[in-house]
Amino acid sequence: MRVDLVVVGAGLFGLTVAEQAAERGLDVAVVDRRDHPGGNAWSETDPETGIEVHRYGAHLFHTSNERVWEYVNRFTGFTAYQHRVWTVHGGEVYPLPINLGTLNQFFRSNHGPDEARRLVAEQAAELMGEPRNLEEKAVSLIGRPLYEAFIRDYTAKQWQTDPRDLPAEVISRLPVRYTYDNRYFNDRYEGLPTDGYAAWLSRMADHPRISVHLGTDFLDGDHALSRDAVRGQVPVVYTGPVDRYFGDAHGALGWRTLDFEREVLPVGDFQGAPVMNYADGDVDFTRILEFRHFHPERDYRADRTVIVRERSRSAGPGDEPYYPVNTPEDRSRLLAYRELVEQERASGVAFGGRLGTYQYLDMHMAIASALRLVDDLDELVHGRGTV
Ligand code: FDA
Image (cartoon, rainbow, N blue to C red; front, side, top):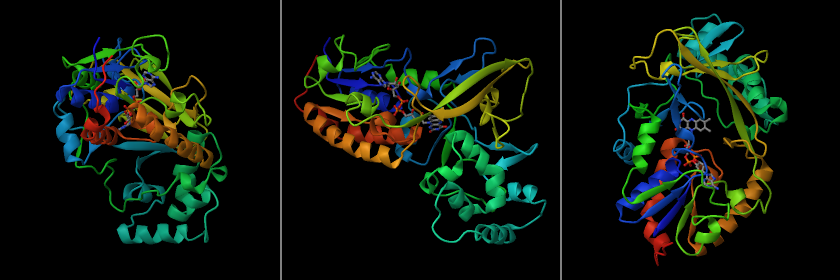
């Protein structure tokens, strides 16, 4: 086998690099330890209902980046889906993000924008001085009543930690909209891939110059496309976990993971919306996704639906890493890893993607950053080794 570039990880970052490198005439091998391409954006058809389910949690595509929008449209069309979320608190359903509708329902009022702004500012003035923890920060942003209803218990469930024991920096802002607009995203473009994520992501890899090697762990030394066989011989773009690449030399970086509990119910519609959060502490999950609502344009069967309950916890060894925890200790470890990453460049290895850089990236951000890396590909591929 002769390849000019090895891409580790068939997520959106790796696939974008591979596809663009192939378009530039390079032969690319993509390895992924999972049994499917597409990384966390992968979806599958539920066998009992035919409903598309996002295997690693709800994935809503949105971007204002023209280059990314033009790029993704080469592989898929997008539906007109617009994301909206509701939350249950105290036996009532409220719209999110907190907006004028949420406020007026919660305070049993009919405030206009200015009155509502004044009310929230008054309640937020309860705490003066530098917030010492997440609770104080949240109260200083939106006041105690809204914090206790919509943020406190939900945050405690997400982090499995009392918000008074979480650092204030975990949140920088809590958006309150003084209109009735409850669209979740503000981006210019939004939608879901018309014929699903699996079709989109598979098309990106479907190129005569790309070979995809699934079920293949790059860090396992026993095959022709492993780090031991490839490093220093051929350029590599690595999108796996940065700490694992270096054998956890500076310690493991902290992640949160999610547990998904999938259930098929014998009803046509369970909750009337794609996402229902559960804000209160007496329910142990954070939200329920009902996947049929992501594609109202599809002709799904009317007597069955698929729901997924989500629970959040800190990731242990063997768990899927989803959200970086980013404690001060994690940040200092990351700086140490960045030095090693810099040194690896001399062996032709570049790091990218959410795991390779230890940061949460939305899909459009992963694609944008991969397109930027491809702009510099010549530098990485200088000398053009082959294996
Ligand atoms: P990604 O994790 O997708 O791919 C990395 C790949 O590398 C994986 O397939 C993995 O198996 C492989 N790999 C790792 N180590 C390896 C090794 N040693 N050898 C071989 N392969 C290896 N974004 C958005 O825009 N809208 C949304 O609604 C959501 N929703 C969402 C929900 C949840 C729960 C999460 C965790 C994330 C989102 N995202 C999102 C973010 C989205 O998932 C993210 O942008 C992409 O996954 C980024 O793609 P990457 O290629 O960087 O990583």
